[in-house]
Length: 108
Length: 112
Image 1: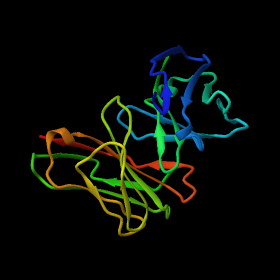
Image 2 (image 1 turned 45 degrees about the vertical axis):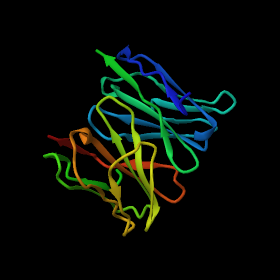
Image 3 (image 1 turned 180 degrees about the vertical axis):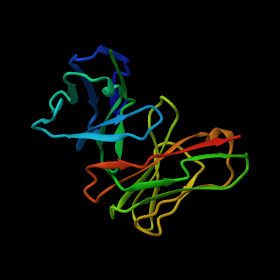
């Protein structure tokens, strides 16, 4: 089992939809958690850190469920510009462990 | 915006050449990382450093080497490039707490 697992998608959703991604993790990747956004052929950009209490930034909400070992990202009112690959990452003892990413395509 | 830079952004080079990919950051971050990523594929950690004179190999076996003589600089060297080295190389850094990691724009390497 991979240390951080994501559904690769793609998720094709209409503009304005709400979409949620989950990411499961193992104990070796469990100190802190993050969501990154990566556009095609670009570097990953930090979208948000994930806190135990959950956190929200505009249309984006991230939550952490330690009991079930997963983190989630909710995007409300999807925009065409949200189309990208979303990577979850866990911070282990000495390194970040990335999932393979979930592709999102928002359709007009 | 993170202040982390990579040069060159694109490099096409012949087999057998020695190349150095540059990475520098102006944030004073102690920790720096090199990842390799093929198009549409996952990130693979190939090297990391916790500070000056500290370097470690990552998860993916790589024929490259790194050095960390200055805090802000973490170059990656390939002594003899091969077509199998064709990939995107991403440099990243994080502060001592290691909580948030920032990536450079990447170097897209093609070995012919």
